[in-house]
Amino acid sequence: MEIFDTHAHYADRAFDDDREQVLAELPDKGVKLVMLAASSLGDSRENMLLARKYGYIYSAAGVHPESIDETPGDYTDTLREIIASEPKIKAVGEIGLDYHYEGYDREKQIRFFREQLELARELDMPVIVHSRDATEDTVEILREYRPRGVVHCFSGSAETAKEILKLGMYIGFTGVITFKNAKKALKALDAVPADRLLMETDCPYMAPEPFRGRRCDSSMIAYTAAKAAEVKGLTTEELLDITCRNGKTMYGI
Image (cartoon, rainbow, N blue to C red; front, top):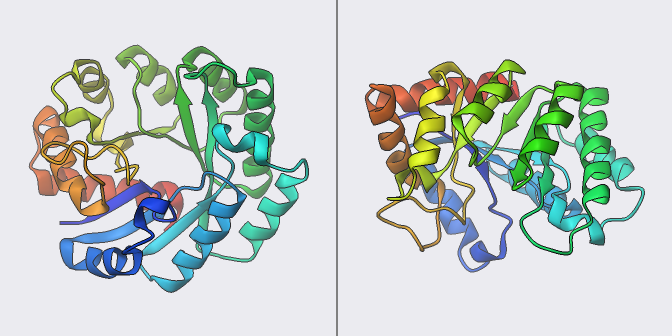
């Protein structure tokens, strides 16, 4: 199987006790490539170091909307420096909007999202987009910038998926599609053509059934892919091969 986990967080504290062991074992479990998404400037640096250490790992650099309050005003200069220092950094992300919790400054989130989209345009890099409970603003801004990249961990409707596809972007799905209450996600998945589909874990989160509630890792994508393959009328191996090629194309690997 050609597993490409296009969105993972191995710098997360959940892997502090056994990170090296997990990452050393993944290739033996069929994992060919992993893209590390960043949540903060610190994550961006940690991802870079992991990409340097492991040949199959690539990384992204960016500031997640939940991290903007702890981020200095000159953060885009820092991101430029990080990206310029490592050729295995292939994307800006994850960036975007998250209106799920009360108290977040929406205007500040939008400013950070726009600034990082402008950075990606300047550097001619794809973006990894996070959007939670912010569909209208996310789609409006993506229409304005029309970046290359992916809307990851997609949780929107089939109609929203079609709007994102019109922009030429990819759509990533996690283990959520294996959950019993995943009807909306499965309808969206059905609307995404195979050549615009990516598989991801968002690990250590979003573990698929039968591992739901446990720490996730990239090898568990096989279960997510099996469900996606069922929807697409493909074998699991075919689905994984297609999505691996898609990820390599999008990230320029």
